[in-house]
Length: 521
Image 1: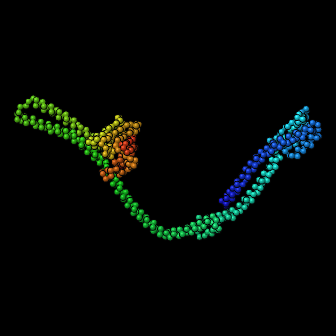
Image 2: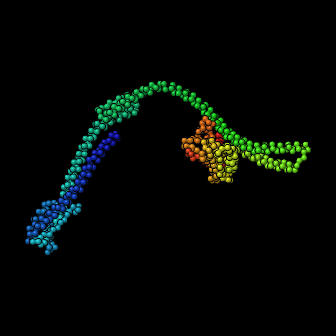
Image 3: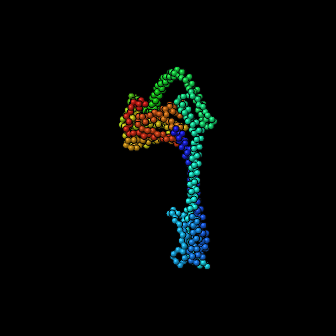
């Protein structure tokens, strides 16, 4: 009922707007135009009437005969536009003749006045003043407008009644039937068919709804047919999903085991690279020491033979022996000390990376220890490592994990960043950003990487050297250690041909590690 009433109201409003508004606008415009025209006509008639009356009144005024002038003046008042006519002689202030009619206050702006001299033989003998109003003409026009408005209202009323009657017969009643049929369909009453009447738009909608009803009946029949076997299908699919879920659970367990083994392998491989580097570095001082020891042994054998055979020994020979012995001792001391330092540094790094205990340490010292272990990998290459390490940066964290991160970044720069290059450098920088935060960066001027590689660099098992020894876990381990163990953040900035910048921000006091983080190591 509300929708039908709304439609009726909409039609009535449309009729009102469509007829009354244009009619009102037209009447207002016509009123303004009529007012303007009436004033223009009044102005022209006033000038002509004043001229004619000044000529007619010359003789009565000259003969001083007001009785003769009065009929002439009153005859003009047959025209309702005349308001007043006043004739004044030159020699007196009293009116020679004056006729007026009452005038309402709203006529003042519609009244025009004109004065003209009354002449006799070319000499002015009196003055004529005439006032005329356009109000009577405008009142007649206003009455015509009111009659036109009433005709429009009557026309609008009859049109509205006729249109509403037609709407009720051809629109509202069919729409009511269509609404009832749609409500029945929505309630699930699909048995009663729709009977479209006529061939207009509403009938076509009714026909479409009838086709929809038939389609729904057919669809429901099919659903009822499928519902008989639905339970069996659900049980079968549930069994299949259960089997698949068990297989997936088992596969996931195998995958986690394999991932854990690969992570451990990668950690051992990192430590193995340090072992190889330290062993290579130890070869030099130990080889030098062995050479000195062999040389001294030969000299002492020669001395022993001379003593055993009672061969005379010259002072110069003994002085040479003492000098060579002292020089050999110096060489032995330097090389053995260097080997001892290497073993000490490696021992500390190895302990840190295998036990990964939390302790207080100086950041620059830990970085230098790691660089000593990594430098052998760079020793016989054209690539160099430069450092800029801030001093006095104390941390309470996990130096082993930090060393593993730095080792992986440096080896990654050597293997990937400088591939195909004949020269290059890596800069390691650390600085204190605030009392609670430090910054560690590894920057190379290698070949860099494109955006697709940079976005996936921390993904597990992602590598650009698949099948050539790359496991794809090095940078994944770096990210896990930095974020989960050391409690920091790592960012990678790189572009092809512009090298790579690994920026790490760490808290000076690492967060306490839980079981989830510890399992990564």
